[in-house]
Length: 339
Image 1: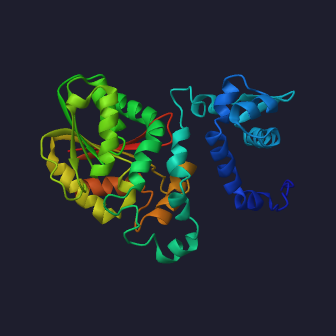
Image 2: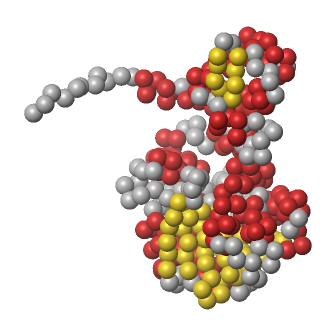
């Protein structure tokens, strides 16, 4: 048997994981200082960056070097430039700018839910109380709607194109837990005969209506305020959107919602869910599999469900067919069920 190279154990991964919060802090600081935007504008030396960002030269130099180590910047002869990812997603001048997501992902409320993860592990989930992310009219979802819109603009556009396949036929779309509203709005933009009914809490729908107005589709955009489990959807929908929602709940709760959606759809209508869907091993793909711990920390019973679990729920709710596909180049998957 050929000799195998033995790799000695190393504490590097442990050390890096203990200190991963430092990477979050550095990226958040750079966004707040508009450092990436400044580099894009040609302020590429520590002295120039310090002036543009209103910060100390020593501080900017250390931060920029650290961001270079992380791969967000590149450095040559004391001058910085943006990496491809930073150029597209962290420069405020880019239409794909994602910096606003820091308002939700790095908010004290969101991070606090991970401060003592062992408590959630022992309990099997986050506590059910008026501070839960699932509590009615939670302000955290207004912050989510405003902060995460940039992150969801591309997936919303891709999803609308994939589902519509160029069709411009009259269409009635139900957008459940609409949040920022971008998914329903994308369907309205790509199909001038599509009308949208968005469901969410009243405080969140304020953001969705602002975005619909900005997109020029407000005349085809209606809202229903309240819980998706309680509000009367109406009937005769062609499509029901369930984007980034089902993962918050246990399978039984999801099945009850699926039944309600089934009743609201026309024959042949489709329920379209955008989710993080791990394979049956629950450890791949990495991003989808890792999302389960987010649900553990933030919800009482949510999870990253496999396609088999989603398909079983839709089948029990009366849907005839269910499929799953990657929404490339995003990191999420689409589960689509046909009534």
